Amino acid sequence: MKVHSRPLRRKLAYSRTQAADLLGISPVTLDRLTKRGLLNPSRATRRPIYPRWELERFLNETRGEI
Figure: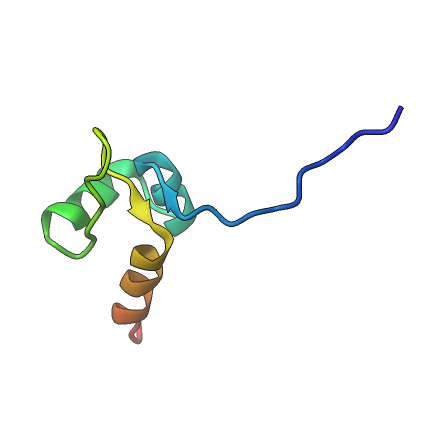
Protein backbone atom coordinates (compact mmCIF):
# COMPACT_ATOMS: atom_id res chain seq x y z
CA MET A 1 0.00 0.00 0.00
CA LYS A 2 1.42 3.35 -1.05
CA VAL A 3 1.01 6.27 1.34
CA HIS A 4 0.69 9.70 -0.23
CA SER A 5 2.09 12.54 1.77
CA ARG A 6 1.50 16.20 1.17
CA PRO A 7 4.53 18.32 0.41
CA LEU A 8 5.56 20.43 3.37
CA ARG A 9 4.21 23.95 3.08
CA ARG A 10 5.05 26.81 5.36
CA LYS A 11 1.96 28.31 6.88
CA LEU A 12 1.32 32.02 6.48
CA ALA A 13 0.04 32.42 10.03
CA TYR A 14 -0.15 30.46 13.26
CA SER A 15 -2.57 30.17 16.15
CA ARG A 16 -1.59 31.38 19.59
CA THR A 17 -0.42 27.96 20.74
CA GLN A 18 1.37 27.20 17.47
CA ALA A 19 3.19 30.55 17.56
CA ALA A 20 4.24 29.99 21.17
CA ASP A 21 5.51 26.52 20.29
CA LEU A 22 7.49 27.85 17.32
CA LEU A 23 9.14 30.46 19.53
CA GLY A 24 9.80 27.92 22.28
CA ILE A 25 7.76 29.81 24.87
CA SER A 26 4.47 29.25 26.68
CA PRO A 27 1.20 30.73 25.40
CA VAL A 28 1.08 32.88 28.55
CA THR A 29 4.48 34.39 27.69
CA LEU A 30 3.26 34.99 24.14
CA ASP A 31 0.27 36.85 25.60
CA ARG A 32 2.60 38.99 27.71
CA LEU A 33 4.76 39.88 24.70
CA THR A 34 1.62 40.79 22.77
CA LYS A 35 0.30 42.94 25.62
CA ARG A 36 3.66 44.78 25.78
CA GLY A 37 3.41 45.48 22.04
CA LEU A 38 6.44 43.35 21.14
CA LEU A 39 4.31 41.04 18.99
CA ASN A 40 1.42 42.20 16.84
CA PRO A 41 -1.03 39.49 15.86
CA SER A 42 -3.48 39.89 13.03
CA ARG A 43 -7.10 40.32 14.08
CA ALA A 44 -8.44 39.16 10.71
CA THR A 45 -10.30 36.34 12.45
CA ARG A 46 -12.15 36.04 15.74
CA ARG A 47 -8.97 34.83 17.38
CA PRO A 48 -5.57 36.42 16.94
CA ILE A 49 -3.28 34.79 14.43
CA TYR A 50 0.44 35.40 14.24
CA PRO A 51 1.78 35.87 10.71
CA ARG A 52 5.07 34.09 9.99
CA TRP A 53 6.72 37.41 9.05
CA GLU A 54 5.68 38.93 12.40
CA LEU A 55 7.36 36.11 14.33
CA GLU A 56 10.49 36.52 12.20
CA ARG A 57 10.44 40.31 12.73
CA PHE A 58 10.19 39.84 16.48
CA LEU A 59 13.15 37.47 16.54
CA ASN A 60 15.29 39.74 14.35
CA GLU A 61 14.53 42.88 16.33
CA THR A 62 15.12 41.32 19.71
CA ARG A 63 18.47 39.72 18.91
CA GLY A 64 21.14 40.53 21.38
CA GLU A 65 23.84 39.15 23.56
CA ILE A 66 22.88 37.19 26.63
